[in-house]
Length: 571
Image (tube, rainbow, N blue to C red):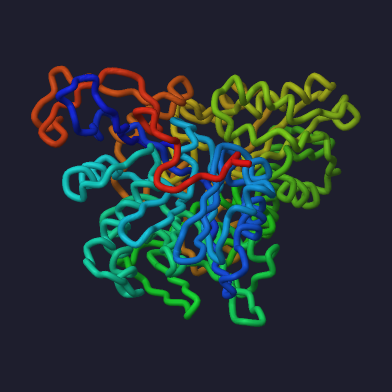
């Protein structure tokens, strides 16, 4: 996953011996990924089969790459990670080679930038103590952190992933203890130091060799992670995961969200928890409830399913008002599969309209929203859905969707409905118009790519070919979610409002991010020329003398994973 980050490259100049981390920070955030950590009380039982099963339950959060690292006897790590779906990468042979009673897993969402195996998580660093790390989110201040890594910490960042950067910040803070063996207080201190250094959204799971598993969450709690336990004959097993569905399916109970700014350390001796960051406004990402999370998950005490039901009820009121104003009648309500089904059913019931499944979905095609490239998304919409003329022909149809992002999918779906005879197509969106970049872990950064950017409701309808578009209001969306946990005073709604709770986001940052993630530069890392550089552009006193397009992965023919043997595709 890509965020603005540098690429370490060796120059052709024989006098240039140092790597050049600030040529251009073409970074990749680890956007809307799934993270998981598991510690079994019985160390003789392998954790990998359950981690793999858990990752398959989080597959909706990332379909580009996946991986598992386990910790076996004498603190030895075993790794398998690669591009691909969980079922393909983590097959029976691969899982059999992952030894040990605790481990960390990750599924990655495809975003701008490199897709090398090196970008697959979890990441590993051997010093200090042996650390494995998985992360979901996006850092705002990556360039300055990379400068620190290079000039002060003297740590090499090998990929274009925020996760590797966070891992090395954590490792650097742990290194400062100078201890032969560390304890929980040292780990809390290190994570607290990391949180003071970083700005952005992050939910992280880590593992220390022979010690235990760790989870922590940014001070605003933007990205989700929680924990659960399971009683066994010998003691308790413990789980960290992005969503509660993993705990439910694996037989864990007592699900509890990791609190904003909190770190949790689990060993076979017990659980330690501590808030390690200064208090900040708790603002979980509302788009988790709109689109990303599974409906059978509970995040921060809020049922995703119930919140989507409430979205449908609130949207029904707005739809009724707009239809009455326009003098339009609707014959049938049809959801755009799958996320909008719950809301569409409640809307139909509230308006006393028939609810029908008008689209049949091919479940073996991935989510088009997360596919790179507009042409790929457009082509895959028709591969993904088929419209049944029986439900459309001669009818005024109300299509309910969770949101309208680029408009590519909506345009194709509306045309499909008209091609099979729909008389009028009205679109109702459970979310307000998305007009702003998301910088906290969702790959829709380019405002120019957002169909609502610079357009009013009528112009959006024209752009996607709809006869009418009705959007949920932001107050209604917030109320739909917040009613199930009134202790949350606000949510991250930056894609609707352009207000960024962490600060550090200005026009310069947004323009840079948009340029890096635009469809026409995906999978490329642009590196600045060295000519005309000032002293401030030097790295280790040497000019960055490169002018080329480079891979975001390893260089000089290095293997695509660093430090650990990768068992993927090894017979």
